[in-house]
Image (cartoon, rainbow, N blue to C red; front, top):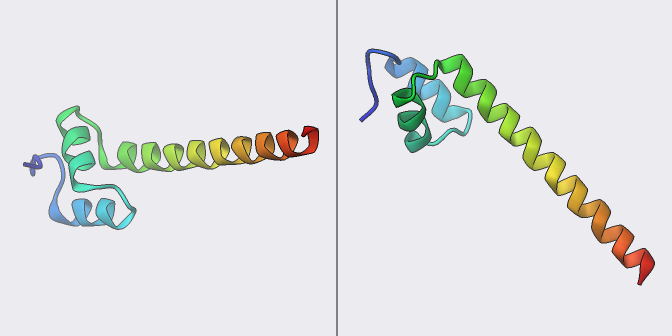
Length: 67
């Protein structure tokens, strides 16, 4: 259950609308993360995923060129 003393329903809904799952919100709330920290962590994770996809794309092109 989400700790309502740390996040109100409006904050939870805003986090859900950014793409953070209810389970993630619950886990991060238990660890003491604030709404802002959760939002920043989510954005950071998305940027890492984009970078990983880009690197994989570059590796695929290099592999294709060398073969």
